[in-house]
Amino acid sequence: MNTDEVLMYLLDEDFQEDECRQRMMEQVATEVAAEVKPNKKRRVEINRRRLEGNARLLQDYFVENPTHGAEKFRARFRMSKETFFLVLEEVKKQDDYFSQKMDAAKRMGLSSNQKVTTALRMLDYGCSADQLDENLRIGESTSLKCLRRFCKAVIARFGEIYLRAPNQDDVDRLLVENGNRGFSGMLGSLDCMHWEWKNCPSAWHVQFKGKEKKPSIILEAVASYDLWIWYAFFGLPGTLNDINVLDRSHLLQDLTSGTAPAVNFTVNGNTYDMGYYLTDGIYPDYATFVKAPRSVVSMTPKQKLFTKAQESTRKDVERAFGVLQQRFHIVAGPARMWDLGVLHDIMTTCIILHNLIVERQRQGSNEDIEEGRGEARVPLLPREEMSGSFDTFLSRTMKIVDRAVHHQLNHDLMEHLWNRSGDSLEE
Image (cartoon, rainbow, N blue to C red; front, side, top):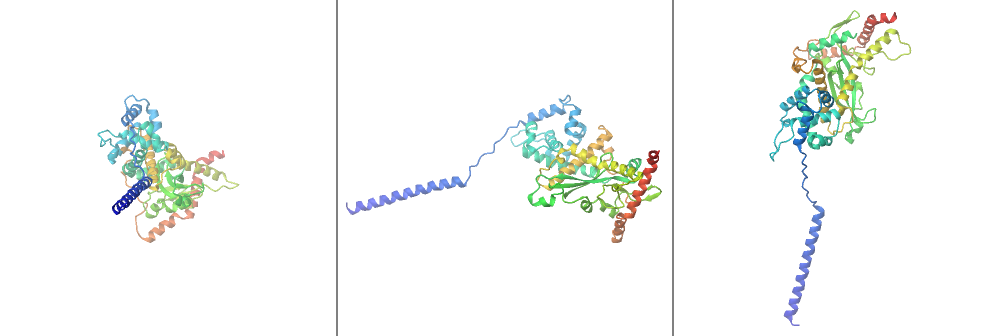
């Protein structure tokens, strides 16, 4: 073999090795890329037949001769059909999202009835978001979006009316109603309710875990005999008791600032210039609270009568909590939302709709809602002239926490109730 043949053989052998090495490197690179970079899958589009779902919903409840009548509608929507349409129109005015639109493919989207019904079903029944897909033909993410935007629209549209403080007409009516029940000067009943928070973040568990050993959020409310909720303060952790919640709420701040309702009444010959609320025994002995006597072995007939009347009248707020939870099951069961702000919007929306339904039931569905409570046509009269000085604030605070006035008011109410019905009991 000459020199040229040897050289060509060596070059050919090096070329084959380089080619083999290159193929191996390409193969390894392909395998590594397949392991590191996942396969991108196209989102599966589900044809939910939204128009068919809307047609079925209309046939069931909204046509001239629906499948289900007015009684079934009230039972499933928790309100009359007139109230539903009122809420529907106001929500559409507030948020254009609830108007039916056409998508990019020139297909009609979900109707206003479907979106509002979805939000109401989640509030009324406390069901999960994907549970509504079978009947209303709406996806899980869209259901949650409808709920959040519905709550914000209701709060923006109705909150100023149905979460406001009582005007002077309301105060006068409350004083007359409660005076006929034996509690002159009473503005309502005060108590707290816990809403269990199932999906509370782990880092907040200790902060929100109360006596029930489960995370919860507290609602403080004042309600009257007709179950109207006049005051609501929501969002504090469940570790707090009623006294801690009271110290953080705005109820006493209105009294100390002089913006509380002007109340003047006489009971058992003594005159008072500050309204009061019925509470249970945990609340402090303030002049603006009336509590039943603590349980003792020997209780006089007057004390027994007063305790029975106070505890039965104080159940107004308990009944309001019960009706609120029965009407909107989402606040009766554990809360599944993660965001505390969303839970606040849900609770606020339930209270607004509750007050709206209470008013409509009192007036009758055919009456205009603005002719009832509506906006405060009569301005709220302050208890005394507003003043920003610290001395005035301190004097008002000392007047509220005056234990002597608290015990004197309890005694006068006890004598007043006894004079009304005690003599007949003795006989």
